[in-house]
Amino acid sequence: MKVLIFPTASEAIASVADRVLDEVKRKASAVLGLATGGTMEAVYDRLVLRAQVDDVSFANVKSFNLDEYWGLPPDHPASYHTYMRERLFERIDIKLANTRLPRGDRTDAAAECRAYEAAIANAGGIDLQLLGIGRNGHIGFNEPTSSLASRTRVKTLTEATRQANAAFFDRPEHVPPCALTMGIGTILDARACVLLAIGSAKSAAVAKAIEGPVAATCPASALQLHGDMTMVLDREAAVGL
Ligand code: GLP
Image 1 (cartoon, rainbow, N blue to C red):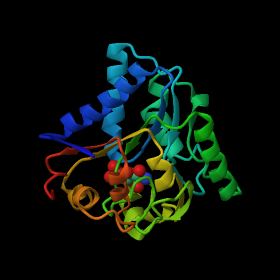
Image 2: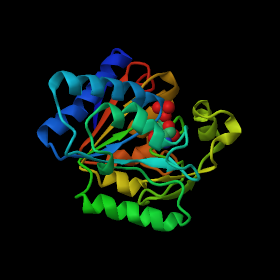
Image 3: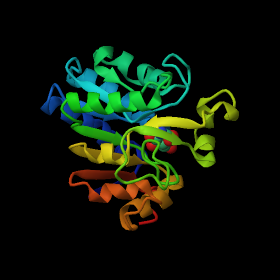
Image 4: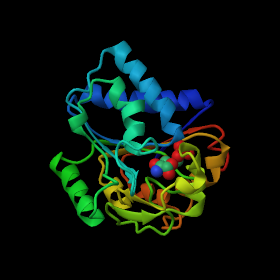
């Protein structure tokens, strides 16, 4: 695992955005694994800007997001579909038909999860997977005790995770109790992974992920097993190391 520690958040953010852009410059038909959450907002802002400045086209890029709330239709204001459209897809030339997130509004969750895994495989697998990290060490919505071999499935969210994401909803009780998420096994299949953590609130989870044992109690620790894994941190997120 490579660990990059930057003096400031903006340098860490720029490093991750530039890594994504470099992947698309290297391979115009790259398959990107994308993430949501507050941390990624600035990454997408920087990516949009750099794509314009460097004139990089996403027309042949495909993308798969990590997760979506179970029960939310794509046009719900707090859905990850809406987040991705507003923060990235509508600001670059990616074709919406080439972007995919798990659908939270299907009646058969298991069938949706199987179809999602099949779609990733059909696309040839993910070239570069972007990740954030939850304060409890979750990646995607793989909460602690998730199997390290897990595939895309429904997960029940912890109360702490629901609270951490409450700001994106009108009322805290509107945060859905469950989500569809790529599994840890699905994430580990990506050819390369980049995790971005900013701020002291993430420092305990970051220390466990990098220096702790590989354990289901800290899902991000499974990334130690990946052969091409980069952790990008600002100084505050790195204080526990
Ligand atoms: C949610 C997402 C994760 C993300 C995490 C951290 O739980 N499902 O993919 O990593 O939030 O989000 P933030 O960047 O807002 O701290």
